[in-house]
Length: 195
Image (cartoon, rainbow, N blue to C red; front, side, top):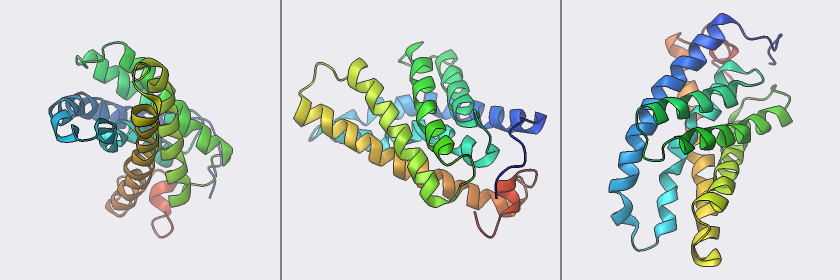
C-alpha cells in the first residue's frame, strides 16, 4: 500500500537518522574488514566486492521503511558522512560515494512511484545502488586496472552484492523487525503479513 503523503514526519527524520548513524559506524568498521580481507581475495581481487553490499544497505533499508522520496538518498548520505567523520580511510570521498550510492536506490523506488516495497523492489533497489556504486568506482578507483580482467568483474560483482546484501538483506531485516513492533508507526510495520 502506498503512503498517503510524501511529506516527511518527525518520526521519519528520526528513524532515518538513527539508521544512518548506526550504519555510519558499521561503514567505518567495514572499512577495516575490507582492508584485512584483501589477502583472502588475492586469487581474484575483484571478487572482494562480494562484501561491498554492506555499504549499500542504508539506501535500501531507508527506502523500505520510510517509503517517501528522498529516504534512500538521505539515509545513505548521512551514513557516509558519519563514516567520514569517524575517520574512514577514503576520507571526504566517502561522502561523495554515499551521495551517488543513495541515488541508485532512490531511482529504483522512484521508478516504482514509491508504492512497491516487496522483495523484487528491494532487490532492484539494491542492484541499482550497486550500479551507481560501481559506476563511480569505475571512474574513480579502478580506472588504472584492466577492463576485462578487473573492472568489468568488479562492477558485476558489486551489482550482485548490492542486490543480495543490500536488497534482499534489507528486505529480510525489515521483515524481522516488523513483528517486534518497532516499525508500527510505518507502513512497513503495519504490513507484517505482506512485507
